[in-house]
Amino acid sequence: MKLYSIETGYFKLDGGAMFGVVPKSIWNKLNPSDANNMCNWAMRCLLVETGDRLILIDNGMGEKQDDKFFSHYFLNGDDSLHKSLAKAGFSAADITDVFLTHLHFDHCGGSVKWNADRTGYELAFPNATFWSNEEHWNTATQPNAREKASFLKENILPIKESGRLKFLKDREELLPGFKSFFVYGHTEAMMLPVIQWNGNTVVYCADLIPSAGHIPVPYVMAYDMNPLITLEEKSKFLKEAVNGNYILFFEHDLVTECCSLQMTERGVRVKETMKVSDL
Image (cartoon, rainbow, N blue to C red):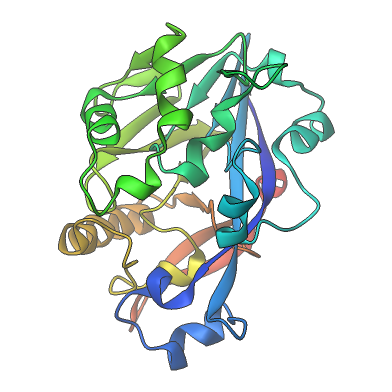
């Protein structure tokens, strides 16, 4: 098995929304904001090569939205999904599986692209099976008013229409050494991959812990649908991660790709930072 970090570019979100009740005087030291209170964030995906399978975990925002949409999120940087895949030696046609932690636009937008004459949509990964779960799919296709803006039909429905959508159950193995568990604080049944690799347990944290700056338990996003559930899920997971010497992989951290953890007087904190290429 081999792991590759896939950078798909950066985007900006309101710093206060990203850190919830944490004061700006604290979070601004972790991720400094611009004059509009916006902080830059990564959209970092993970590529897993094992046997004859090439599994892409999440795929960024995509490129099919209009200029008005992108103006809200200030897409920036030189990286893109397909440039990063090419850098790793692969193309979209090589991907056998697309694992979607959840269906918010910054995690699944790259799944679907315009067709050649821009009259409709087609899958960006023509040979891939797309993995979600029934609970989350139902939430994404019948969203509540607060979350509706994050679930864009053009990112989601073409996957089902293609016939390539499959559902996983909680703790079910996608393949040996690759399983996931569900969490419910950020959104309904978000799936977090757990990968056994080179003697390490690597956990793709998605939006349970979007950056190393979100490791302290009270640092919960205002975007979370059920923040008190997030508190419980984070606390339980972080204790497990310390005891199991897990490596955390961050999707949105601008600087830190991965880290190990340690217990301190202030609670669980970063021990060492690293890249998957260092493991």
